[in-house]
Length: 297
Image (cartoon, rainbow, N blue to C red; front, top):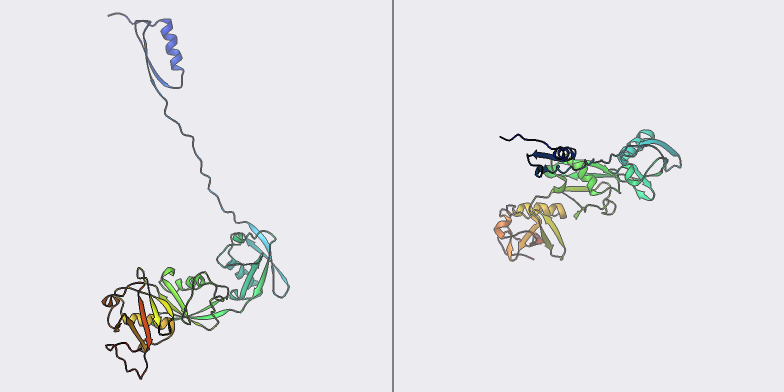
């Protein structure tokens, strides 16, 4: 067997290749002319990426509240504090009920659920306090349940929902409120909706997956009623109409097409689905109508 020898040139080549940044294997042979190398490329290295999360800083600030009597009230607050928290501080200092406080900054009425920072309120900002008469409402639920609620004219339906979610096990999106036959629309203030102190507001459960149907009166007026479910009875519909109009169920006569609807039957029995129109007529003593007679109009 021939003895394997390293020549000077092969040794220098091996040293040069060994000093590079890649993984190299060099094999020397007895022949100076042949030098076989196997090179493995270095794996790709991705730079470390650091994610910087924004952190909200709760900054301490001093604000001035100009009272309706002309006196200035200095308060310590924080930028992440809510308007409701600030009103509570004012109540502790001035004994003004939270429900009677209306705070204004840069001609904007401040909402209870928003934070001071949301309105750009910072150190040495000045707010105006207006005292308003509170609205005392009676919320009527199913089963003759009642709740008393005090709100401001500038409050919206969302404030009623927030209050009721603490009292009943009903999701806010399933709540529908009706006052004097008018559905209280979300996003509008109670003042815009014409709600007055002492009004009774009916809480109606908006059933999931049911939709609405349309009720048309003899006068040609129309309104929508929730609960167009196949398994709901005509009696259920009359109760929902009573919540909207105040008309007692025994005063209502409902018809669909040429059929007079009987209390014990379901909507599915008559083929009534969402977006269908039901006709509402008021029963009178002289009509002598019964549910199995033809429609008296």
